[in-house]
View (tube, rainbow, N blue to C red):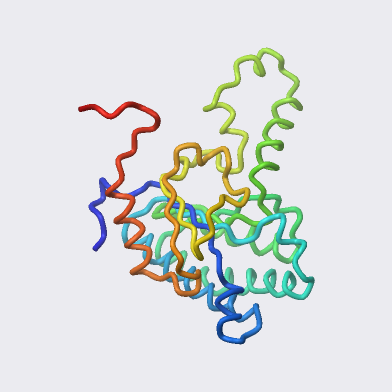
Length: 238
């Protein structure tokens, strides 16, 4: 059962974990787990759009992931382009605007070109913003913001910086902070994901591996979020 609109999170972030374990349990190559994970991406994106979640951000590839075996990284980057090519019609049909976060210049040119193309083609869509975090590091994002502020060289501006103005230097500028973080496969860590933005994010962890995380599991996470009492550090009124 889907929670009422007023109980829905405005921004859901997801750490999609467990593709490799899913494949290992089935004696399959790791890439088969990533391919199965794409099916979950499609279903969760579609579900979020139909339910009415305005922002959905998926942690697809961290900067640390570059240290994985070269053949796996190459296959993941190829899958990214295949995903974008296949899902563009769905994004247009569902009025979804595509966005990418992270150090995108780390990616091969073919990936950069495809990302830029899909962002341009979906740029006027207003139904939902789907963001993929690629070559992303939460710590590096914060450092990038600090460097950008210092590079401007306006000491008066530096002295007046606050949380709101600082957020304008982050990859997520213009987006609300995540209300809900979903992490699959049972791991209990943030993995360097949206560290600044998750100051008051509700965290939902499930043992379900990402390729098995589908509409019913997503609804269950939203239902749990709807039951929580978010106080943002304030005392609860009696």
